[in-house]
Image (tube, rainbow, N blue to C red; front, top):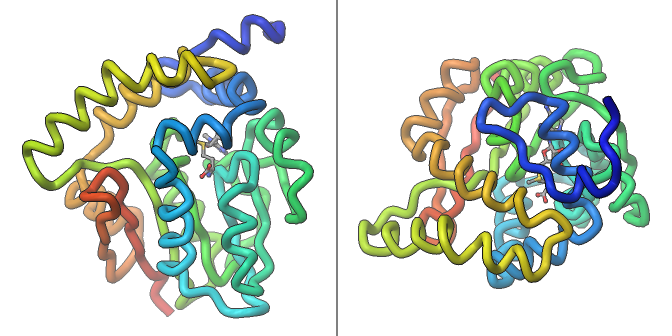
Length: 238
Ligand SMILES: C[S@@+](CC[C@H](N)C(=O)[O-])C[C@H]1O[C@@H](n2cnc3c(N)ncnc32)[C@H](O)[C@@H]1O
């Protein structure tokens, strides 16, 4: 049954990440999504997006899929390279909230992408894969739509490397973050899900193995902000 505006705005998905629950939850945070991100990351989100563009190493004229692109905030960052970048997401609310951005947007599910085989030089997914109910299937779909020799960059919250910092960060995630979100977000409950889903996500090494198992080659990663975020990159064999 369709949810009312009020129901969407106080809704959080469970950790089994049923697609309709995840899409509804993001519809509910869409209005203030960009602002909330900047507040809860203390402005680091801009640096993380810039670093993701650098890791993609895009050239003018290349075709790039920004998957689970939400409001397209990362898509416009990638488009600064001169590459042709398309934003895809299954939350129509998120795409609508970013419709003022000058990038093409296509509604679609990461587990059944609406694109032909080998149509992109590069694929990126930022803070999206953790929310997909079958991330391994999504990584295989991304491989299918990438040209031979093309690359994938995954930006995702990860595990801080230094033990003391890791402890402080986990406290922030579980206690302070939901309180901060209550002050700024249109759906604070979604940020409880955010904290729980980050804790349940594999660490850098475990995740690199999952990428390789999905068929990606030469998988490497780079930590940002001490491992709060990791950028994993892999190639499709030519
Ligand atoms: C945390 S937001 C990230 C948005 C954007 N990439 C960014 O960096 O701000 C996660 C996005 O993943 C999308 N998403 C989750 N599962 C998806 C799926 N199976 N197919 C397409 N989009 C999905 C959600 O709708 C949401 O917009």
